[in-house]
Length: 246
Length: 274
Ligand SMILES: Nc1ncnc2c1ncn2[C@@H]1O[C@H](COP(=O)(O)OP(=O)(O)O)[C@@H](O)[C@H]1O
Ligand SMILES: [Mg+2]
Image (cartoon, rainbow over all chains, first blue to last red; front, top):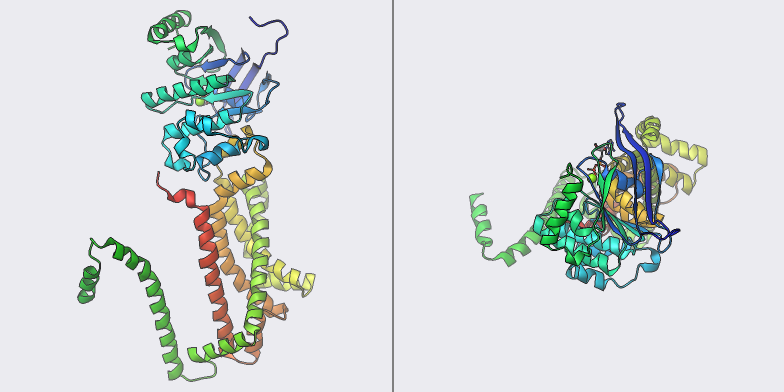
């Protein structure tokens, strides 16, 4: 599909990542993990709990430099990265709006955020402190912060975990809305297959620890056509290709 | 006792919440005033039972206070001492915080320097002051430096504790979103250290002003400590008490009008319920 010579926006080639504890016990989390995410594509890393998804994201975010291998982040455009962490990680001593603006580069600090806050249903909460928000609202604020920076690539680490299903579903739709307004190369980590099928263009399926890629499942269908009938078809064909993955 | 109790409950029936909240605001202030008044009366009584030049009553002290205020000496010396307290406080807080955060962040560095901290914690204030004056001369820098050195180890210990509680996830968020150095200090580091800064400040101010008096007594020619030394040689206890009480009052005002409001402002995000 890719024309010859086109830039690969996100290219990951991690040979190995091993944790060494102080007592000399070592855990190999990643082994020969390589995959690509294309420009403007929403990809999901799907794998069981504890397989090394967060570890992978932390390496890509530059937070863990102790690994062997290499990766290449998208070049061109803003050259910025944004992350929605497993916890909202808002600064409790700053308001919602301050939290969002602080993450912006100086040149964008004063930009108009009305549209983004409106879309995410945060318009009335800009001056609240994070402690005054429910977890669902705090997650929305974390999404607002990530999208406000207009990143070249966006990383999300199970952003809907520990929410009730109804809230999680509403947030998935909100995520799709803001993402569609400005499609950004995105890599989301999840262990929820239904979520991955609903949101992504391609699903990168990971093995249990030490993790590597089992295979890639492309979802070519436009998202607005993924109704419940289509979703169960997708589920069936996914299970057909990956019978061991739940 | 019982009469007082029933009176109290009749005064503030549950329905009259407005009056009650006014009462709850006034009662502590009133208690303080009455308590201080009682202390003055007791002092007055004692002074009249044992009349002595070494034990003047509150009226005499008040007279000296008015005299010193009228000729301007009081405010001059209070101002000088306050300036030294402020300078020593700022120097000690900055140096102590930087060292404390470094020790709290790097375990190996902490292991190496911890004995030094313990050593400095246990050097008597007087020794530091005397050595400061010997090594650096009887000057302002030596005076303020000696006070700061006395306080720095306490700040280091408190801020080291604070640095150990720093949440790495905020620093990681700041790395991902490329916060500048100043933004990191202002929005990530300082807010997390705020309770420890407040604790170090509180214990700091009261320790520092007491040491400043000693420094002034030993090697300065102005300030409250110098005046106390002067009146000690003149055996003028009324003047000693006048200066002491005036300075205590100033420090309490600073606590009330500066430290507490600043703290309230810094912790405003904490007080609102979830
Ligand atoms: N700092 C660490 N030290 C030691 N082991 C770790 C560390 N972080 C993660 N691990 C181990 O690496 C594996 C992968 O963790 P993680 O990437 O968090 O999994 P998940 O896929 O659930 O996000 C887990 O088995 C975990 O125990
Ligand atoms: Mg994880």
